[in-house]
Image 1 (cartoon, rainbow, N blue to C red):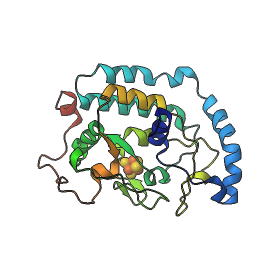
Image 2: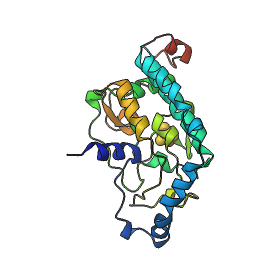
Image 3: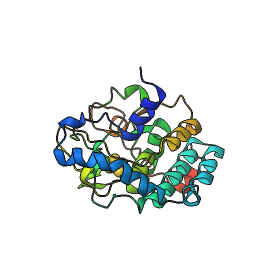
Image 4: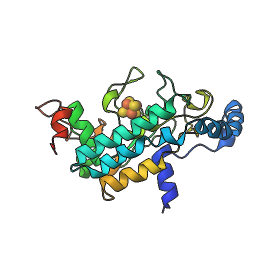
Length: 235
Ligand code: SF4
């Protein structure tokens, strides 16, 4: 049985890292300095800038439909990404985060599905979580090392920011999972769970949208639902 801390860590970081003594020596050396570098980088962000996400979370909490709540949660996560991103090591072309677990709620899966015209599996057809050790199972939306649904990518994808000095810890090592000093967004995760409802099914994006064994994967004939329509209350 996991405690709350372990569950939040698993949501945010996505995987249990490999025993560090088994990692390459340059990675082991970097892991010695990465926490201090990350703390210094995060400290460059003022609380005023960080707090720009708060009214967006308030909008999410005050919204009347799950689609609107997810819309505002995405805005809040994007606000954090915009604020912290310039101080992180993340750069275009890196797809590390697309090779680790990507946990999303059913409400978010439905919201994304509506925007991209692709229905997620029903919760009862999800099956067990995929085994994602060693980065061998990329997100189904990763295409040519780019996100094919970038505008609609999940909350966790927006807020996964590496606060090390460069991408060394994000390089994909076959068979290994390296601990990356991500921005700590566990409060955002808790807020999302609270706002969307604690009984929401939560699963990996591969379970909601992957190709394995689903009969629930048809494209709706109506195609993409406009954001305008969604915001008018199209549940
Ligand atoms: S949704 Fe996009 S950004 Fe998120 S893991 Fe998949 S490909 Fe990467």
